[in-house]
Structure formats: C-alpha cells, structure tokens
Length: 190
Image (cartoon, rainbow, N blue to C red; front, side, top):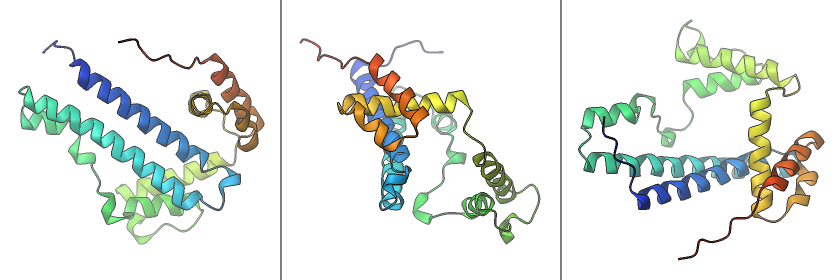
C-alpha cells in the first residue's frame, strides 16, 4: 500500500470543499425549521443538491489524482462505489416514492409489494422513521451533530443570538454552547 501523503494543495482544496458542503448541509437543516415554511421546499432542495454536488467534486478530484498516480480503473470504480450511484436527473425512483409513502403513513406503492425488493425495504424504513418521529429525538449523536452545525454556522456568521429564534430551546442551548467554544480562526501569516 502506498504511504505517500496527499499533496498539500489537494488537501487544502478538499478541506475547503468539505467545509462548503457542511455549510450547505447546515442550511438544509435550517430550512426545515417552522419559520421557513414559505421557502423550505425550494431551499432544502437547493442546499441538498449543492451539498451533493460539492461532495461529488471532492470525490472526483481525489479520483483524478488517484488515476494520475496509477490507481487502476477497476480499483477506482470500487473506491467510488459506482453501484450506489443514482442519477438525480431522473427524479425520485421507486425507492424514494416507497420511503415517502411509509413516512406519510400511506399504503405501500405497487413497486414495494414484492418482499425483499429495494422499494419494499425503503417503505419499511419510511415506516420506522415515521414511528420514530412521534418520539422526541434522543440519539445523542444526531443531536450533537445538529448542534455543532448550527453553532458553527452561527459563530461564523457572528449571529449566535439568532439560534434562539428558530431552534427548539434544547437545541438552541446546545448550539449556543458549541458556538461559545469556537474561536474564529485567524488567517495564517505568509
């Protein structure tokens, strides 16, 4: 196995792109809040696809470097997990429709009627998510992740006080604590 570290310009580009992707993910969460009812459909899709495109760019930059340095096509395709790739230009597929039906408590679509299919698994996943949504969020990892994203964005925008205006009180408190722990980075001296 090659132990050559990632070249510094590539590493920094990756860090910048991942930061942009994370900010887009935070905005997806932000637009799900009740005060965003008038824009949530448009803005969650914009920011989710922005995040996906940005992370795709990360993968493609790394893939280009790997190819340049001799990683074989088959290995690269395995690393890129191409069998998991779905083209969003086609719109929602059977799995997404089935998942949505499960989330909304509707009957399973015809595509989910065959046990063991992707659509039937997605329908059951949607049903589980709907059941879980009836309970307060208690997964500490999910709560901390959301608090970190909201706190980071609020700190970067120097708008920590806004957290109280759109987050539930418990989440706002956690995000505020995260923001308070952060220092705004100083630019590196050249």
